[in-house]
Image 1 (cartoon, rainbow, N blue to C red):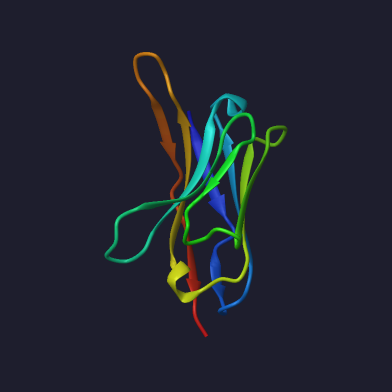
Image 2: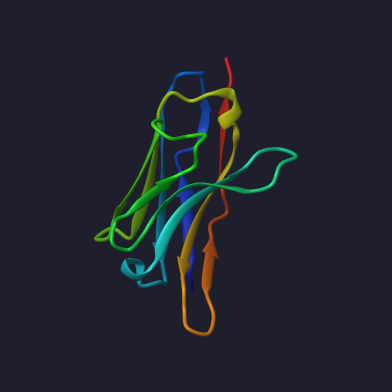
Length: 119
């Protein structure tokens, strides 16, 4: 059974920092591209950051320079370090595991962890 379990969300003041964690089980973690998405109230889910199996990273323009995605293959865990948080970062953050296949792709999602940025 595949599980992705996020943690680390919460209420933080503008300018603050949080580190999200996503612990996975049931997948060969090393093979998967991992990503963080977020969904704000009334908006579509959007990609925040991604990291490939080889460690290449990418970021949404809205978080560039404020966010760092990393992975620990020994712990089957992906992290999202968020600094300089803004009210517009308020959203539910979801962990995604993605594997592209010849015939089909695999996508797994966590249940989400909420970040609220407010004074």
